Length: 384
Ligand SMILES: Nc1nc(O)c(N)c(N[C@@H]2O[C@H](COP(=O)(O)O)[C@@H](O)[C@H]2O)n1
Ligand SMILES: [Zn+2]
Image 1 (cartoon, rainbow, N blue to C red):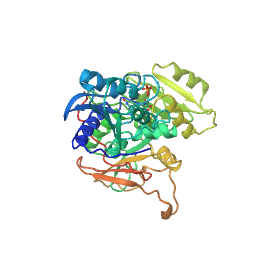
Image 2: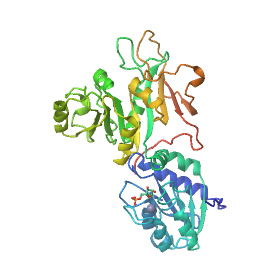
Image 3: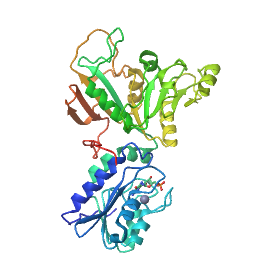
Image 4: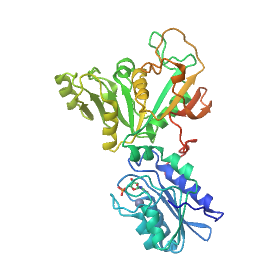
């Protein structure tokens, strides 16, 4: 792919605006990417838009409609390569051509194999100047979920947990209310609003009985996914309550009792996915099935056994740990009890670490593998 550097001094300003537009839809576009578009002419923005939801028009279409006739001979700034294929919507490259734009600045090429360079090639073929790579790192970062899912068929998985400074997620009597500060717990609701699925093990449901809903005023409830190989969670568990606006999926195995499975399937908003394994849910297969359903991001909220296994199976991409300035000692549970590394030289090393203390807890964010695209995820200040 030919990459070129734009020279216009306003390019960065307009691309920054396109990125700001894109993230307004954070948590709303899955399995599609976050994309923003700005149309500028004579150093003025004449149209702008962003992708709101999968199956609806792409960012470029909104921006072109906003610009109307002013799009002719203008420059389009798009955070992702314009698409060239007929998906649920027609190709944006053709819409840009019809509108008569004379230059397109693209932050990054589309990792979707159906597009991947073809949108850029199509625009260049018609004689439109295309500059690629401006703010590519920022554009990649806002689409870390899309990039992972479209290139691997697996969702982007984030493990979020709260622990004391001595590494306990509860006291030895099982008390975990509350480990982290009010501010950290508020932030968790922002995460729940952003990710498609919240994942927890049956142990967490049996011990804490959480609802796993999003309690932000304009938030939306994620899909609740419980890994429960033996179908042990009680029928009156809060996650099964139909008051949440999204389904609760229970992943189980052949060890589940047929009667209980039948009863749970009758509950409104509850789906039971039974795998053909004797006791343990095949986790990678489960994750693939999520992407097949169009759910591309997972917030793993515990417990330590499930989290440890997922890390061991290299299914976790990122961690968000809240470390409270508290000490409880004893034999309380650990956030990664399912991970048993024997030698320090084999320890999993995190990359691209960020530290923040604004909530009163030490909030550590890190990635389980090294990559070029990491950085600070932008805050979504307001929607629309
Ligand atoms: N450039 C661009 N702008 C948008 O606003 C987009 N949503 C995309 N998405 C790309 O097109 C695929 C989805 O196509 P349909 O929505 O099904 O028509 C998606 O996988 C991206 O490759 N691109
Ligand atoms: Zn498109």
